[in-house]
Picture (cartoon, rainbow, N blue to C red):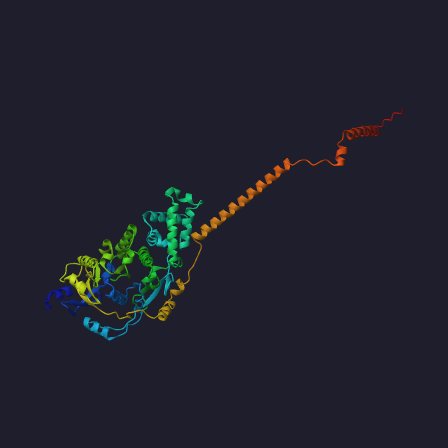
Length: 526
């Protein structure tokens, strides 16, 4: 670095690049030639928070505190914030911080008027696992692309899942929870349902088996809790408190931190849902919401081409809806180049270069920054905790000079609040009664089960009728072929020739007597 600190030094040129006229967030004081210069403040225009950003750095370098610092000032400026709390240490933003000598020293170094302050917060959880207001999504709104990502399906299987969703939509089969999706998949490979998709490619038994097994594994991770109703209205994240400060929505994820693919995909659903629901607004003086995507590398690991395209498109277009997105991760290389190119604001904490891979990542990171007056390779490995290299977009949308910065201390509690305080905050929320209890209404599973039960009952009735008709025919046939019984003694007498002759004789004589009496003729005498 240059050793000059006179008024014409590069330090002044760097600081001039951050002298904005409109509302701005105060990040910290410029570092130059080993000294912290509190009169040269590094800031970010509030209007540029909608242009997205990246907070990166090795573990333990202060990324979470930077996230907290930015979130506090956004809330104070009336901008709602969404934070994904992976490790459970961001809940402290709701409570005032605790003053100590370390904070006082940092505040003095960077020219900060530090005051312990808590910020209005709501706490959420995925499906009610862990502390927080349950956030649920229906399978239909989650969609086949995100579902394929979380089920780890290949491209062919993803296309088949898309056909399944298409069929369910066309037939009015609501896919609300995972048992609905399972029921539709099983039906489409059953004898009754095989013909349903025949005209548009069909669903192979093998692919259906893969999807069903993946669903089983997904359910074993507790995913059944995440899908269902009441579905969460992501518009709740856009609220402000009664005092005008932006509401800080903290999604508590410690209970599912061992399932990173699940929560990262679910966070992507939140963004996609916001994009779908919000109107186009263009550039705003302040964003409607800033969304912090912690552990962002988990979102991209093993992602299909379709999923990466979905993320890239969402990030590119959601700015026009007034939503800013910050990815928080270890190195910029964790983020695909097409996404990284859209992140106008950069806060890069220290990187380590202990291995050849580390050194390669360091060089790659340096190349993502504009030309600067610093030796960035040296600087990035020498930064202390709570220090970062920063470049943001100016009010005119141009990149600011690269600035090494000692960051301000958050004013809220730098750590989690107690379990009892967290539980009390959750249950006192007006949203708790709206989303706490799950609802299981009639959907695809119930409809298919009812149709199958009716079909089985009809089949049983038809089988029973066929069996009854068969038995009746067999009984009639048996009756026709049975031997005639021997005649009785009376039948034998009546049927004999002598009896018939005698009967004729008696009948003739009796008949003559009757005719005579009727016609009046006399009886002949001998």
